[in-house]
Image (cartoon, rainbow, N blue to C red):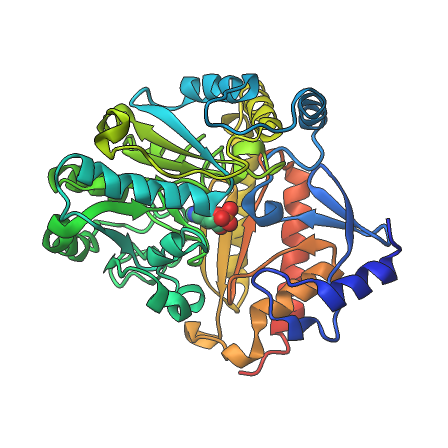
Length: 458
Ligand SMILES: Cc1ncc(COP(=O)(O)O)c(C=O)c1O
């Protein structure tokens, strides 16, 4: 391995990082990470960092879990890769066998791809083609909600509602219908000071009328409604009550819209149940999974469809119903083996329910942020918590001050990896986090926040 200085030189001269303005690193090197154990990462100088964002929301069981390491090594030695058309293999069957036991029986068909965006691309194409297969060629568009984020490939960008990420690429995408979403943090009707878990707001779902009106108007031309269930991640860690999802499911069925639930971020325990949709007692027509599918170990994704969707594609080769979609690494055997083992470990540990006491503690500690004069909202769902940073009276901070960006660097200096979304500071914790680790993470985060904001312009 090259020495740290050489790694940084090569990085500076040749690498292009995601979601990164390279000029931000002109005078500040990225951290060279060389190890991970449990909820901590280790840099080339031996410094430890709590991974409070689970390495972009992927990690569930901590880094380098020995069972996952062993599963990867075993499978790599047996068969590292083979194309998945015409061939199948034991790890894919093993993973699907586990998932069939935890997902509703109505979701019976599993289509592999590589990451969250590709799981969404596949779902969008399936929804579009489903209606063609059924002779309803006029249903070509998608309905999404404000603040939605479903990935960075063009189809996913087309159903994205975060202008910072998506606006520039709009000319490249087919326009979707954008419905007003459930934004509890900014809800004019709410009766609570903070959002909490979105069931504490005194909500009567006043926002649903405008959402419903748009769906009723646009449904005839739309193939599907796509939602992030209960938690909109990249849009600002916004939480909403399960009732919204229940009513959205009923409305989608009534209006002949497929419901795509994107559980790329929420899946595999993060919201306190194995899948967020369980909390609403609904079942989607198409389900997108990735990130936690391998516990954050390897890239892998699934689009899971109902039998009805799958059957609409069934026909002879000349029927035009084939789903022409796939990727070179579809169902990579090593990734599937890790995914299967990951699910076994999660179930053996009784996660996420076995973490209930730690979660209570996490939520209690989050509420202490209400004492901070720079915090305008606090919200949480399972292992995810967020606070909005704001000025006096909740006024937005000057964007030029880049409070969130500064808190990120203060966090690194204190040994905690945060990655605020604008001025929203959030935590996306692994399922195995302990009370002591929650305390260490939140204490360091709070110190980082104070270090920045006590010097902020008012
Ligand atoms: C809800 C959701 N969908 C899709 C994606 C895209 O996943 P990926 O970055 O693996 O392409 C993300 C990524 O954060 C996400 O949060």
